[in-house]
Each structure stands twice: as structure tokens, then as C-alpha cells.
Amino acid sequence: MGTASSKKHTKDLSRRNFLKGAAATAAGIASVGLIGCNSAKPQSSKQEAWDTEAEIVIIGLGAAGLAAAIAAKKEGAQSVLCLEVAPEEFAGGNTRVSGDMLMIPDDVSSGVTYQTTLNDSYEVPSEYMQAWAEGVCGNMAWLTEELGYDLQPGTAAAPEFPGLPGSDKIKTYYVDGICGFSSLWLPFMDTAAELGVEIMYETRATELIFDTTTKEVFGVLAGDKRIKASKGVIMACGGFENDPDLLQNYFPGIGCPNPFYNGSPYNVGDGIRMAQKIGADLWHMNSIAASAICGRTLSPDSRSAGFLNLSSKDYIYINNEGERFMCEETKSLARHGKLKDKGIWPLLTVPTPSHVIFGSAAFNEKFLFGSIDYMGWSIIAEPGPATNQALVDAGVLVKADTLAELARKIGHNADAITATVDRYNSMVAQGKDEDFGRGESVYDNYFFSAEKASGTSDVTTYSNTKTEVLKAFPLVPIEGPFYAMEVALGLLNTQGGAKRNGESQVLDTDGSVIPRLYSAGEFGSIYAYMYNGGGNISEAVSTGRIAGIGCAKLDPWDA
Image (cartoon, rainbow, N blue to C red; front, side):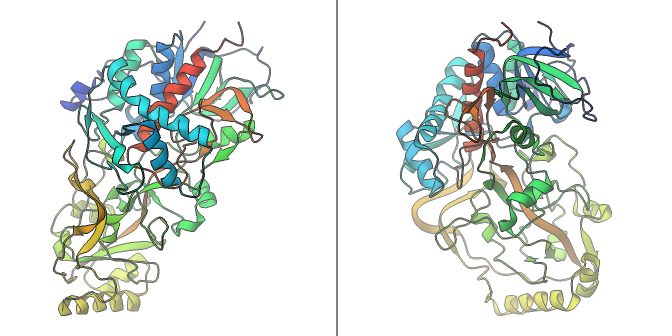
């Protein structure tokens, strides 16, 4: 059986060398540069010529895709091929730039109880929830006993929602005790390379090749190349957080039609379109995990976002009308971008466009970004302007001597912004924020400081009842020169995609299994409403593992 051509890599991708500071690059076969115009159409005939082939073709190279590849190989698959849309140096999807944290409940029953509560009224069939809980609980033995990884307990999101039924059994873990820095993805890549998993980089899958009557999947179309999958295809292709059209279609209610992204820019909804063309059902398309309020990191028109680090407190957020719209510390209380309000958990409201306005004290801190250096796209991509002055030089940060000039530069009404800042400064002088209570003690039962996370020493506060999580502090006036930057909700990932059953098989709109088609990870996640931190990575591992094993057991359609 033919496979994609391969060559020896010259760069070592072991996690140990990576963590020592060595250059990281993916192990596998060389890129064949297949991105281009889709000049060929998928054919239902399996007798057509194939450009390359494998028993199992996996779309995506994040935790879901790699877990599927590893599991399939260990189950006996002779040839497994992963298609990765990104160049080799940027491969890995959101897993590569996440905290690499795994949420693993102590037992299946508690996992079902807890996640069912988090889903609230957005119910998932009980057999699927049971399979999800069995899968994520099974990650511990698979990762430690079968793959030999060292999972050490974390403190972040363990649990993220204390006090809920089952929450006392929710735990989180890091590989080697390391938060972020691709600490799971890198050993996955090592294992995949050892098992002989093949990888084609810069290869965008655009169509599934299938029988138009039975929907049985034969392979994948990538550019103009037909790639045969004699046993099946596993879609581990991530979400659509970097596709503005899909975001506007599925998230009109968040009030932020142009959010920024914290993860991979290559997640543009390819899987959604492929699934729709074969008649797959979609679910959880309006479920999303977010970070908080973020700013642009690269250029004035880039959606790549960074976490703001403004410890000086001489700043405010203003909306599209030039008015403050929240207590600026509220963002610290959000749980994956959601904040409880009137009994429900909506995403943080960040109107478009919104801006952060701050004064000379914050600017003189030198670094607006950089407080979180273990996750986010900047850890593998060009980080962009580093200092505040570099941000000004790049046009990302706007500087002005007066508020009127600042308003003009960012396209706001000068009178509105001047009135907002003047009112805020007058309240600072009086020592009380009458509008939003900023500076006062804040009480909650959970607080996690991602800015101070480091391995298992994440700064996290838990309580089954409300306690003081943010201490009172003196307000600081905003004094010139003045600075402004556009801010938006930062997206970590979307959860929607092809609906799958407990065996990770993709279902059509009639609820029937589509033969030889599987999905894994955030592309069709179980999470319909709320979820616990580390849940996406853990689900990616479990559903990938289940899909890989199931697909490997199939008889080839060309036998």
C-alpha cells in the first residue's frame, strides 16, 4: 500500500529538549505543499486513481488527532496518515498553545453528575454522557500505564465550579507537572513518531470522498490530491474561532461580532463544511470557551489576541458609545469567559468596538502584554511588538496628549470619552466608584489567576461558599498622556461540530452512523453550555483514542 512520501527531519522534537530551550518542530513526513485551488471534485466511485493512501486518514494534528493516531497504531493499524493544514513550525492546533491541562474525574459516576449539572438544560443523551465520562476517566491509565507519561496533579480548575454535585471528585493534571509549553502535545508527537505515524503538513482537507448513496467514506480530497483511507477517516480538525462568517452566523448573541482569538489561526471551520456536505448532523454550534478581554498583539488589523497585564489600575474599558460598561476587575472572575448573571452563565459582554484607555502610569510599566508566557499563539509564532512603545510604533496602541485627540484617533466621540474619563477621575478623587464598585472587595467561591500559573502552583482559591477573592485597593486616576487600544472577547475555542455517538462515530441528520467516519476533540464536543478547565484536552484525548481504536478494527473497504 502506498503512502505519502517521507524524509528524515533534521530537528528534534522531544519534550525534554523543547523544555531545555531547543528548537521545536514536528516529527513526521515532510510537507508536500498541497494548499491551493480546489480544482478536483470528490467522486463517489472508489475505483478512481488515488494520489496517496493509508488505512486511516486523520484530519488534524492536535491532541485529538495524535491520540487517534497513537491508539490506531497500537491497535494494529499498519499505516496512519495525519493531514495538518499548518506549516510544520505552527502545527498542533489549539492543543499546541493551550495550558495542556487534563481534567480527569476520580470516578465515572461523579463525572456524569458534574458535567450533567454544567450542561444545565442543554441536555446530552445519557448514553453519550456516560461514554464521555468513561473516556475521560480512562485517560489516566492510558496516558500513564500504556504510554508511560508522568501526570502530576494541578490546582487550576480542580474543580472550576466548587459546590456543584460531583465537583469534589473533579481533578486536573499536567504532563510532567508543566502548565502549557506544549507539555502534552510534544510527548504525543514523540510517541507518534516512534510508532511510525506519517504527517503531511500544509495540507488542507476540503472534501470527504464518499458513496453518495450509502455515505460510506473512502477518503479525503486535499487540494487536488485524492487521499485514500481504506479503513476510515477521523475528523479531529478543531473549531471555527478564526472564521468571522461562521462566528457571525452562530454567535450573534454575544454582542461581540468580531472577537479575537487566543489559539491557532488555522481553525477556520473546514470540518464544519465537510460535515455539512456529507449530511452530518451538527450540534453545540453556539457553545464556546473564551478567555477574557484581550487586545491585538501583532498589528492594527490582526485578530490574534494577547492577555492584558495592567497592574497599575489607571485604566478603564469603554464601549462603542464611549462609556464604561463593567467593573474592570470583573474579567478576573469569569470562568472561561462566562460570568454568572441572574442564575445563568452568559459570556462576558464586550461590545464591538470597545477600547481600553489608560494613562502614563500603565504605559510606564513597559509591558502591556507578556504576563502569560506559557500559552497562547505567541509562544510558537512571532510574538509581535514586545514593549508598550513598540506597540505605539506598530500602530496597535494609540497615544495622544489630550482625550479629544485620543477620541479622534480611535474614531470615538470626544465629548463622550472626555466625560467618561472626567467622571471616573472625579470618583477616584472621592475614593468610591459609584458606577461599578471598582476597588471594593469582591466575593466569590472560585478564583484562578492565569497570569501567575506555573506548573502545579497555580494561584487558585476555592470555596463552597463565597469568600474574598479580590481584595480592596485604592483607585488610581487616569492622567495624560493617554493611550488606547481596541479590545474584544478572546476566544479559546468553539465546541460545535459533527454530532458523534459514544464510539466517536459521526451521525447524520437521521441519527444514523456515517460508515467509516469518526470525529474527535472540540470538533463536535460534548460540552453544550459550561465546562471545566482541562475538559477540552481530556475529551480530545479520550475521543481520539476511542476513534483510533474503533477505526483500526474495521476491515478495509478494498479488502
